Image 1 (cartoon, helix red, strand yellow):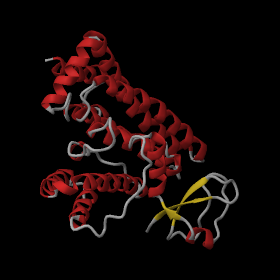
Image 2 (image 1 turned 90 degrees about the horizontal axis):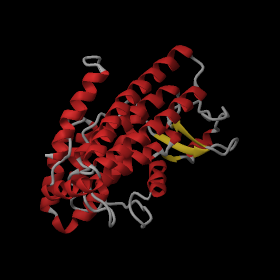
Image 3 (image 1 turned 30 degrees about the vertical axis):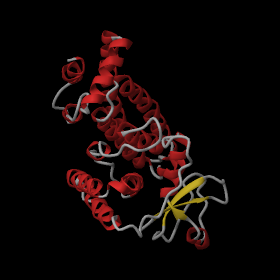
Image 4 (image 1 turned 30 degrees about the horizontal axis):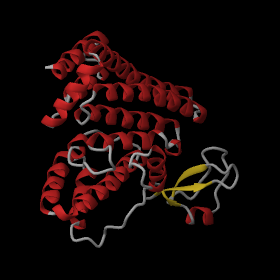
Length: 310
């Protein structure tokens, strides 16, 4: 099965189709696609590439995918890609670190190739009806060359905005919940690679905006009130945690002040360690599973934020 994208001849909007589905229809206007239209469709990855160009995530240079299949290190990239498909992010990170260490003359190309691999992995997760499960921060720490103002944080940041700017990924209402959870998991990765809590606050604000649009998009596609209620409730629960997380970060920013945050950011960059770490994800999981309430979650987030000023 391959997920493809094409321009609908009826409404001229981008649509996503399954190449194995004999009856393909536009998700916007409902027009049935003729077989020749599906044959001329392209893989969905260019949708993400387009979003990456729009977000400027790779600096001023235009994003142009490169074929690295003839490089001697490419089979190892394929092995790493297989690990990601199996959700073995720790193994993928370890293998990538070894590859970068052994191929120092090609590390820039390897990093760019991995960006494409990870983008494809996220899209594949969504196309297969599952959300990206998290863990990218382990790989992001190894990726540093993406323009002048870049680093591990830009790797996660660019993927977040690529998916957030790609409404074509929403084919049915349930896809909105999957994309929202994927964005949420990317947001949970972000504290481990961004040593400026103001940027984390910005990510929270943007998530609230994008997830609200996802609810609206799902609602426009839904004809089943019960399933739509499930989609809406799940996205709202993600919003609830992001809201309390963002409120706690906002309070900490006000407590520290701009000048102190600037100094702490430089300190954390020099020491090459994360600000909050995976503890935030553990708190989020406990909250979403109903093991702790909002007050307890906010208290625990505040505890881990305290390490930022130590």
